[in-house]
Structure formats: C-alpha cells, structure tokens
Image (tube, rainbow, N blue to C red; front, side):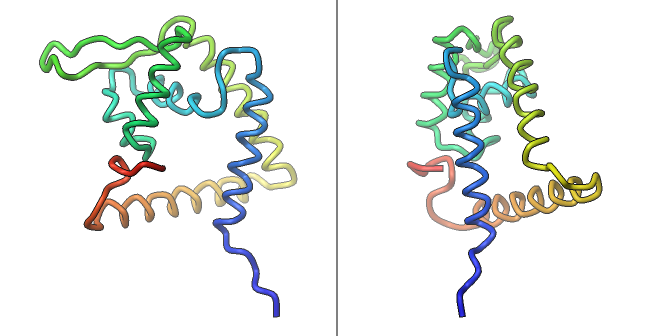
Length: 156
C-alpha cells in the first residue's frame, strides 16, 4: 500500500511554485521572491520595528535584517529612529515602495486566481480558513515550546 503524501508536501510545492512565479514576474525590477513578503508586511503595519517584522513573518532576525537591507537599498523601505527608544529603528514604505506594493498586490491577486481555478467561492473561503488555522496552530505550538524560538533559529 502506497502512503499518501502529507499536506505539508503539497504546501511546500505551492510555496516553491509561488516563489518561481514571483521571481519570474519580478525579474528586472530589483526585487525577488524572497524579500517581497517583508515589504508587504511593513506596508500593512507602517512603523513596525525590525524585530516586530521578524515576529510577524515568523522569520529569524538574520533573514529579516538581510531583507530589510535589500529593500532599503532598492529604495522601497526607510528606517527611522524611534523617539522613545533610540535602539529601535522603525520601518516604513517609501513612495517607490508603495508603487511596488501595488504591483505585488496585482501579481498575487492573479496568482491566486491560478491557484483557485475551478474552486467555488465557499471552497476558496474554506481553504483559506483551514490554512490560516493550521498556521496559527503551528505558531501557538512553537511559541509554547521551550528551547530556541523561531526568531532565534537560523532557518524559518
């Protein structure tokens, strides 16, 4: 009897194919599939710190620092000091970054149409709800475990 692959295998395939699609779509624009989620997250929550960004995306600090550096270098993000705590740098999206966010939104919208082709509206909503719940279960479980946290790990 052949074992059926776990849902994680399918989620991994979706992720890899999405990365390939985004890399192809963003070629020549100074942004790859790796840093774009960081730009979208800062756009959703302007003024967040780099640590808050890492926590929001469940990424380690090193990966987050590299993504922020690349986005800043490309002119999509700026850092500004927090007047209450000089150790903290607040992140915000530049005008150029806002234009890139609009492009990313359109690319992601069209990619979602590809992924959900043949799905009914209730099936789309159910799929999203189930994956969100799974993500929250994973986040909750890992945040309650002793040992290194996601932020301290070397890999997301």
